[in-house]
Image (tube, rainbow, N blue to C red; front, side, top):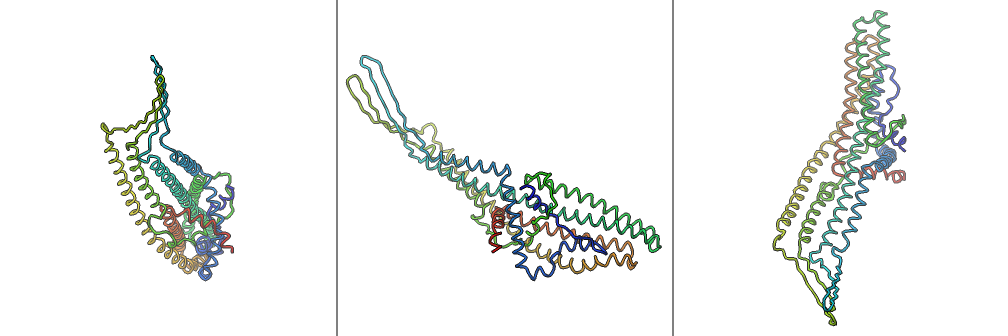
Length: 445
């Protein structure tokens, strides 16, 4: 199971073989736009294929998260609250049985049965509190799962970007080595100067350093993914993942508005209800619950029966401050709800503004990279070998194309980050992933 999931979790994609003239096209630009104009013409078919591919990945991810200790603790907490709810449903007061014996000229025997009446409805208020606590625990478990999913997906996004950068750096290093050999031949032929050869050599050294840094960044990203998902480093495989297909499913539409039905706000509102239930329970705990008793006594040859009633007197302590503190707790919970609502509304507004704009900029970048970038990448190496451009201009142009590819990766990561962070903060990420995981059969039909 771990081997299969990690294979799907490793998000680096194959960048293809090196181009004859310059691998920048195959390593970078074609990766970013590996489905050019035909993608937009067949968008519905591609989306269906993406959903089918992502469904199995999402189901595996959810299954892996269910095995984490954090979720086991949440399930244990839910069971604990279930027992507490059953306990709160029981009667508050048990009847009391009293026996008495008085030795004297005539022995006296007595028996008394008493029962305190739950006049303040302690049982009902206790059950309300336990029920709300159980509902809050369920919501917290959902938000915790959404948080874990968010952290895991962000780590996978980071891993995807680092693996793409590593593959790109590897091909740039290999290509720079090939160009250095060509440069040595051209120096021997007198086409370029030895100074230009040194520039090519320095470029190779820079590519080597870039590859080393990219390798370390990719390793750190892999370790973070394995740490979050509880995977074993020995299960690493080179099978291709399916996570990259999720980018085509990102949208700012189709999610719940910011109201009390939103999972994150629903939790805050349940906290308000719990504070109100706690205030009612405080009053019932301090209420005057009467005790009724029935007694029978045999005094010598006489039988006696009695009925008694006792009431606690709130003389030394009226519990006014306790009730006032409980009322203030309601105010605290209400203000916390309003603060959460305001914060989530701001996050939602940012989400609605950022994701569509990022997606639009990303599509613009794809189109520009496919047209101007691909043409430049194809011709640069040939022009330099033919002597049409100088070595310095050639190296500077290649650096510009490399920077353009890395900017595209940053845009892609920014889209994922903005989208995932909002869904995780609002508590909707788990529902989306579960919906995605359950779409395999529906999409296939």
